Amino acid sequence: MFATLSDRLADTFKNLRGKGRLSEADIDATAREIRIALLEADVALPVVKEFVGAVKERARGEEVSQALNPAQQVVKIVNEELVAILGGETRRLRYAKSGPTVIMLAGLQGAGKTTLAAKLALWLKEQGRSPMLVAADLQRPNAVNQLQVNGERVGVTVFAPEPGNGVGDPVRVARDAVEEAKRTLHDTVIVDTAGRLGVDAELMQQAADIRDAVQPDEVLFVVDAMIGQDAVVTAQAFLDGVGYDGVVLTKLDGDARGGAALSIASITGKPVMFASNGEKMTDFDLFHPDRMASRILDMGDVMTLIEQAEKAFDAEQAAKAAGKLQSGDFTLDDFLEQMQQVRKLGSMSKIMGMLPGMGQFRDQLENFDEREIDRIQAIIQSMTPAERANPKIIDGSRRARIARGSGRQVSDVNQLVDRFFEARKMMQQMANGGGIPGMPGMPG
Ligand code: GDP
Image (cartoon, rainbow, N blue to C red; front, side):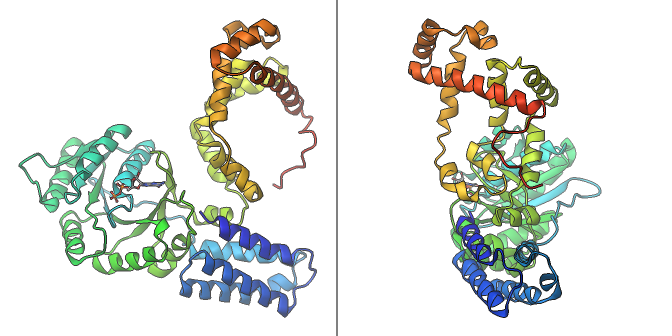
């Protein structure tokens, strides 16, 4: 998502680079290019107008004319304005002061509500809460079952209508669920409601009835970010028909242009609170306007990377590995372990994509073959414990055996072992304060 927009904006800024002063013509040209970039990304016209107007006005002002580096100042302005249209501050969930917090989900069928309900439940669990999922989508034949399957995957109780009891009455299911949550001491209730393929009055009424019956602390509108301008239209219809407190964008991993994501907060006046970006249950997080802007401008999203790393890594183990690197005792077992830790963070392309300046490597990242890591793992796992602990003993006949065991070529084994020694040497130098040879320092 946002790839074209990122590229376009990068080109725009490139044209400004090295200019000591910006002329009126420079500012006009930049504004025009930003306008085209946003329109191409499918951002709603009123939002584009407001955005470009704000950037232009600020670009003419003192903050740019007095800046040592006007081009950088323009990037800073665009960044700040992007944060603003994305909703400004990160909006966090409001929890009820007493009794269970009720979160109701609304949106079209296929928006990703049921998937999201489970992702949200898992996220809440990780925050130390005790959520309960409620299957009040009684329209789509498989929805209840799907929620039950997802609930099981994330280890969260699912409240569903008993056969013959409450079937067909989602309002009653939702109401009973809240009572059940009180009884069973669940502190958060997530109500999944029915969607339709298109906006219709009956759907809106049903959602409104559920809302009235359970008085949610938060109503979240779930919308597929890949449907472009339709997302904005649907968002408006739900705002009028049901009303909501925040928006959840799903399928941000798709390769659509992403304009919906950029328009929705401005158009509806409701903050985007969460984003869902993949099929895995953990592909979900709070939506941070500043981090999203930073990603669009290819300034990276190091904060998210650090948070994910903190979640995935075992600090004690990491310290042990660092010590081993320093002393040169790092073995193939350690290497395998580190690799598995990094994998917990997600795909290589996702991880690398969060680093600043990776935009130019997007194609390589997208084409990175994740199976390459499986192959490396298979080779290491075909080694004996003694070989892993002391790779120096891996001679020709051992290499042939390892290749057979892992279904790879001897040359693959050679390459892995050689690379391991090289990497170990380099990492030892780095760990001892030598810096990475031939790598310029990353900007802080
Ligand atoms: P619902 O009808 O709103 O309940 O939608 P579902 O939860 O059944 O989701 C519809 C489809 O979108 C399913 O195939 C999901 O796997 C998929 N989906 C949901 N969220 C995401 C996401 O963030 N990324 C991707 N790529 N697919 C998603």
